[in-house]
Length: 387
Image (tube, rainbow, N blue to C red; front, side, top):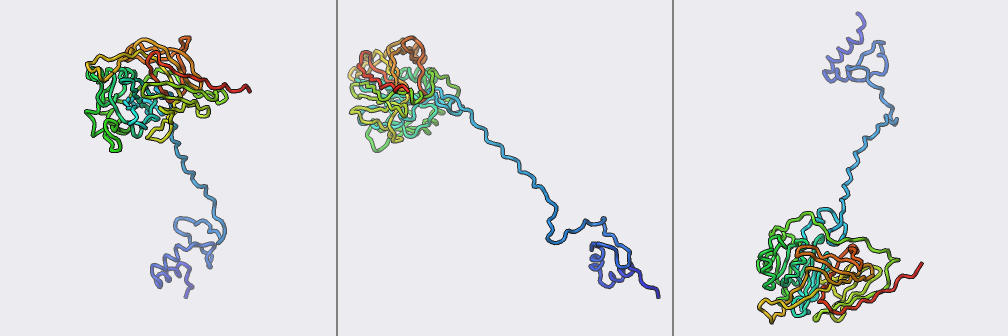
């Protein structure tokens, strides 16, 4: 009987062990010749050598993750009313003017520090009133809101602001009816919008309890069609003077019959710390900080009685078109100059004694409008010592 060949032995093993045995015999890698010298190839070719246990395998370089795309840095532009650098879409916010009470019962007022520009002028019988002009900032609480006067409308018209007020003199209301759809301003009278965008607080009594806030003002601007868009600023701004160039001390006093205001120049912050009647620090009730503008402008205007059929109200009218004397304080230094305004909607501009446009410091400006002939006190600070 002949000796069985290796292949025959495999077949015998398959028959004896079944399909599993065939798979094991066929797929098991061989590292050398079979005992009989006849090799059996694995299907698909010769397998790669297997590394011994503990031997490092071939190194594989990890695929680097793609670097995240950096967020683009927003382009900053000067805000049109105060020169503060802000994103372009913020600089395009529509200006909002709000009339603010200044009787003792209205203090402390809210919203002063968020305004880009603050106008203060006599309203009736020597009682002054504020107009806060907001642009890049969305304020918190704002108030108490009070009534309108024609000359405040004229200042607000310089930027076609949304003009927020609670009623007004007959002269002002007739102007708003004729020019309050964007010709001068966008009229936002509380008598129409109270309960939705303005409201009465319970901690004060009327008429010193009417308030609003920035979020509601922005919504109201949409309602009256005061849409955002490019704004051309009329004033020129520059950064703060270097600390070494700022004086030490300095004071400005201006007075209305029912409010006396004092500014103390602060060299470190390059601001004018504001005090009111009794020279109490003026604190903004919204943010609890002292009111401290970067610039103070005093302009003298001729006021006279308003012949509106209500002489007991002692309302005033002002001669705003033309020019007059002004004092401009910035960086701790005060110069004498002039103001000019060519028409109702033309900007109020300020010039030095040589007729050159004045450059203000970036930041908030307070414009103190006084009756021509009013007394003021300007005390210059001490110039820094030569280094």
